[in-house]
Image 1 (spheres, rainbow, N blue to C red):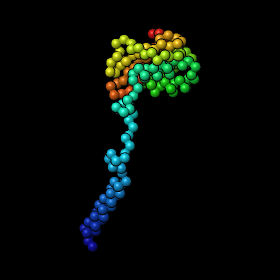
Image 2 (cartoon, rainbow, N blue to C red; image 1 turned 60 degrees about the vertical axis):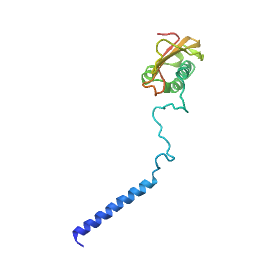
Image 3 (cartoon, helix red, strand yellow; image 1 turned 120 degrees about the horizontal axis):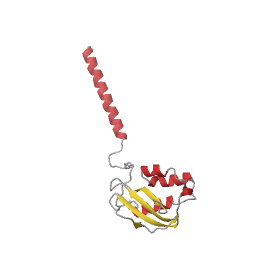
Image 4 (cartoon, rainbow, N blue to C red; image 1 turned 90 degrees about the vertical axis):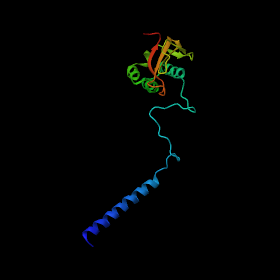
Length: 157
């Protein structure tokens, strides 16, 4: 065998090996759309079958979680933080629940002011202790979930 033929045979064997590897790998991959679970997105997108909570429901949840002066610091932060924007989470990270001036939120949401847009909303609730609680919600796009960007508890400014 000449050198030229030897290189040609080795090249054919290498190409055949690569093709065999590709075929084996491809046979173990799931087919598109056939039983493949959808990848979870970082931001849940509401669909017709899994509509997320309404803005008023989200605001009530935030108000109810915020107005718990008897909660421990860690419990309070862990339960409230997923419902806050990044800026609000930073703002309220230093708050001690015992210093929160409200308790016992009633589910009587009333829209507040001119902040009723596709990306901003505000709702006011009555607390059994501490006066009105206003929750301002924000989302960057109409498909993003509502998050609290500001909480005004007990009528404080």
